[in-house]
Amino acid sequence: MALAIQTYAPDIKQEPSGPLALVIGTGFGGLAAAVRLLSRGYRVRLVEKLDAPGGRAYVYRQDGFVFDGGPTVITAPFLFEELWRLCGREMADDIDLRPVDPFYRIRFDDGQVFHYNGDAANMRREVAKLAPSDVRGYEDYVRFSEEIFKVGFEKLAHVPFNSWQSMARIVPSMMRLKSYRTVYGLVSQFVKDERVRQVLSFHPLLVGGNPFSTTSIYTLIAYLERKWGVHFPMGGTGALVRGLVKLIEQKGGEIVYNAEVERIMLEGRRACGVQLRDGRQLRADLVVSNADSAYTYRNLLPPEFKRRWTPQKVDRARFSMSLFVWYFGTDRKYDDVAHHTILLGPRYKGLLDDIFRRHRLAPDFSLYLHRPTATDPSLAPSGCDGFYVLSPVPHNDSGVDWSTQAEPYRRAIERYLERTVMPGLSKHVVTSYMLTPREFEHRLLSVRGAAFSFEPVLTQSAYFRPHNQSEDIEQLYLVGAGTHPGAGVPGVLSSARVLDQIVPDAAAFAR
Image (cartoon, rainbow, N blue to C red; front, side, top):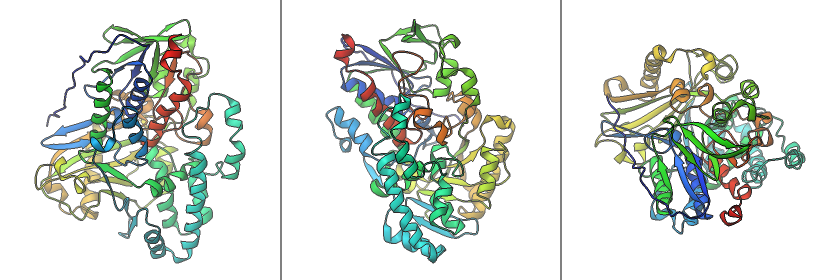
């Protein structure tokens, strides 16, 4: 079944005034960077490899179904609202953002269910159903998560880490908040029941991390969700992409599609534009890369200009897991399935070891099942439901041949869903599409097919990630999952927010 993709015209004109910023990629990081630069007096041109915007948030349309390609959990909506206000508008004028409750329905392998949301009384009841003796520890954990949030998100997520001194200043806070511990290790200090530990430690998987190796600073996600909730935009995540594109166009920005960057052009050690695969050269006063950071340093810059992020350093880095994503539609409704469901398999640490350490495709899996039609039925034909199911899998160091393994893996997932939460599924699937680590590497240009770029371990966080202002090249800036503060929608939007501190205003740049 052929995918029907909306095509966007690249013929938007700009007023010839002010310095020109060229943005590589139209993921949320690139779109947010474009809005911020336009609001500060820059002319902006974005170039996109694909035929439509969004990057990992690309939208697939097939047989009357609409599938958001990637991010589906929207938290910290103020980061989007701020972009609209920079353009003199209110997001609510363009986007209908709905709260989702529960945030997640978590199903254990034995069929027991945990309803996870932001209501304190509900969460105490849910923890008590699993382990009454852990309720007090859970409450202590939430308070500690709030402390981490106040430092890790409110104070550090929007500031650059361009020098070792900037890192040294936060070391005392990181030590006090036990950032040297892993997420699972910190959770285990507060609660003892293994099922409660899993419920409180799965969040790093949403940003490409292993709970058993990701720095515990990422426990801030638990409090972030409690503070602002989990939301979904009517029309899907693609509605946010379209809304940002509209803002950019209204501010005079230009977006060029089907335009893959071959290299970043340099004058000395200064970025001065890009050359596309088709030979076109687009000059600019500065370049912002929303491409995968590892790909930017490995593929878009000449070796002699790489001092810190050399090919050898990139090769030695630890990368996130990849994803197998099956998008499918059914000719019946599954009203018992929540908007967000997490299905935990029979193994937790063992499966994560297979994915992150052994790079082995295991026969069992844990899954995230997304049913957007639970909130917005318009994303599927009448009487139908649309889904995607996501399975964390090893990145391409695994050697898995997805050209032969994708369909057997999909069938195994289908059988599991049919046996657990979606009876009769195989008889009701009417449309189907798959995204594998192969597509992450070759279509989305992620090194090793890693879905979230660099793994968020302590030695690859903050100062130790590729900087938002390139250490190697002048007038080159980085946004997106592979730079500070990291992956996830709040992370990539915050990476664009960092630009406000490191990119001079247009008037000052012109001088």
